[in-house]
Image (cartoon, rainbow, N blue to C red; front, top):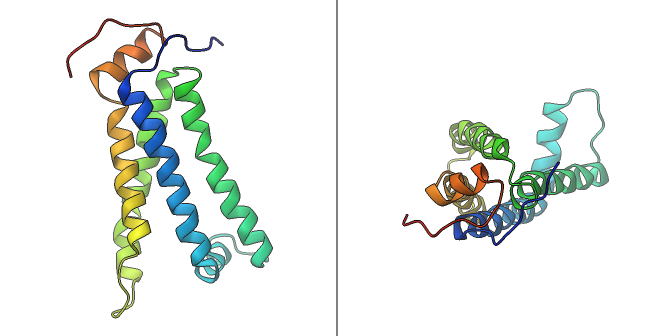
Length: 148
C-alpha cells in the first residue's frame, strides 16, 4: 500500500468537501427524524430491537462509513474507490422513487435530503473528470496541468 503524494487536483479536493458535506447533511436530516429512522431500521432488520440509542449508533456508523471512500481517494488514490462511490450513488438513486412515494400527501421533500443527494451526485461526478482520472492513474504523483 502506497500513500498518494503531491498536491491533490481540484476535483479531488472538491470531491472530498462535497462527499463529507453530503454525509453530514444526511446525518443531520436523519437525526432530525429519529423516530422515522428507528421505524426504518426495525423494518429493515427484523428480530432486532432498535431503541433510540441503537438507532443513534446505527446512524453514527453510517456517517463514519462515508469516510471510507474519502480516505481511499485522498490518502491512497485508489482507483477502485471511484467505482465504489459510483456503485453507492447508483444504489442511493435507486431509492429515490420509493422515498418520494413514501411521502404523505401533505409532506414536503426535506431540503437537507435534496441538498445531500445533489452533493453526492456532484461528488461522484468529480471522480470521473480527466484530472481525477489522471491522478488515480499516476497514484497521486504531481501531474502536468491539463485543461478540463
